[in-house]
Length: 250
Image (tube, rainbow, N blue to C red; front, side, top):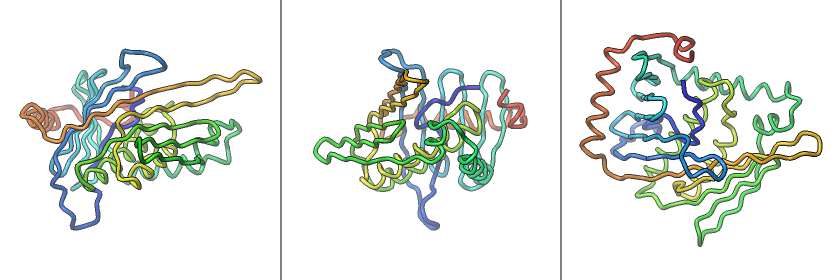
């Protein structure tokens, strides 16, 4: 099971108002770096196609599919050839449970993560968006989107990614800070090209900074290999061994 450190990595589809048709098909390639590292610690590709989104992590080999028609996630472990399913409503319920834990936390960083507050700065000339908080900062270098629908789909996609991660991995960060960044990006009608996240921790008088940087590339048209990958994924969903979420997480 992966650590799901990706700042964007999962599974949304047409979460636009009822009656809206999602005609967009595109792919987003993602790379994540830690500190000053030049080698990506995580790489993934996310394909938006028809009424589903397919998120593929390279190492370990895993895919997650969100199906709007069933409002359900399918998790696929390529190595163990197993799969688990999670309802979207259960993801939202888990997120709400996280939010309610804020008053129980003594650690100030964790309290911030459960109820973040940021000061926003946006430079329209450079397209740089900054969210400055007490314990963490986002700096997003942005890019224009082909149209408003892509921005909306990306925002919903990234929101689900942030919500699902702590449900799959106990050490993942709560989603609320990332949700605020996603909202700000949509407000400015932009997509992220590069996102730098800086978290500051303190122990006594000693402060430490943890920095991750993600790069995102938008490919506006799916290739034949993308469509073949989607087709193969549906074949896996038929033949893989179904397991519970608890078994999958192990």
